[in-house]
Length: 235
Ligand SMILES: [Zn+2]
Image (cartoon, rainbow, N blue to C red; front, side, top):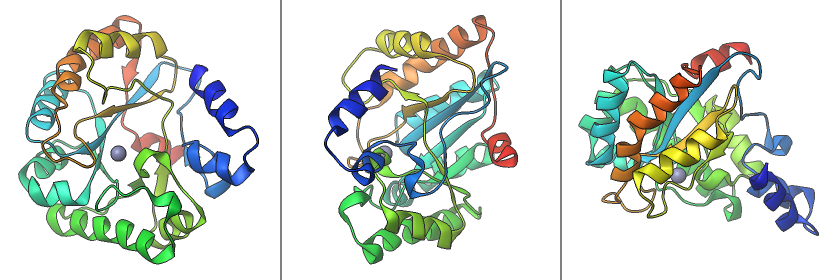
């Protein structure tokens, strides 16, 4: 609960809207799926900011080898740069989500640029992958009422997350693995990164290297990785 406590402390004196802007699962700007069932032992893996030439193939390899489903929130311009990697993730049966066209921070933008960011990525995913993306995740989780409007217009559901482990920081794979292991709890939607939202050549190899150990730890603790689609059906 440390993240929540820090978030609330930082938001003291700010309005409710400001709090909702910076808290990724806040319901004020529309419903957000931030966690699965608290009973049982289900976990949901999500990867943001790809595709990425180094990390995404290694992550897809591990997921395939260990038979684990995941959700990839892709940046539109990265999909244009690495379409074969996006196709490979789709062909493996993973859920593909919209993470905007350019990974802009949406909370300070107005309705038109926000809709361009969402609709642009929507078009790229439909054209390049032939899929109908159903899930949206805002860069950094930052939202405002115009994001909600655009999400509704495009027919998306918003997926938040239960915890992240700051795997974008320059930390070794063993530390990423340790941080995930310590935070595991039933129904957790886990936020990891297979790319960098701004730099298509960003280095996320540490996350890829940590993934097999993350999966092993979770399974040893009795958890099972599930497709996020079952949360959509339930909600
Ligand atoms: Zn992102």
